[in-house]
Length: 147
Image (cartoon, rainbow, N blue to C red):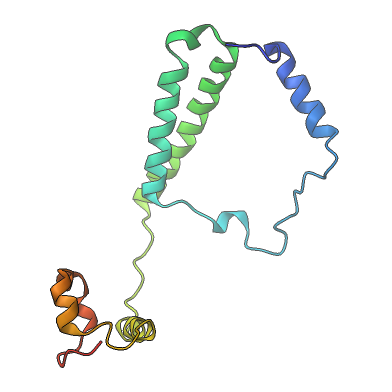
């Protein structure tokens, strides 16, 4: 690979870039919105993050990367983050989010929305059944065949 900057200079350059940036760091950009703690990953997303961290730890701690100090720094940070991710997953498993109560008007609102998309007799029951998608959409139709 090509060396763009010496490993020893990375911290210094990063700090100088941050300190001398023409724009402010924008730390308060979300001051009028929800707190950061209101934004959460799902447990499935957390497992994807966990898998990616494991993949990157394996990649950057083997092969040609073993002699790179930048790769070693990445691995150390990935490992630290992996501990945090696993702790968060454990909390999510121990304290799952409650399941939302069913919304009584959901099917009615979906049907109204579905009807609002129609053009003429576009959603004729016989026509839809002929398309081969009936099993996926039959719950949208009333007994009389109307949507």
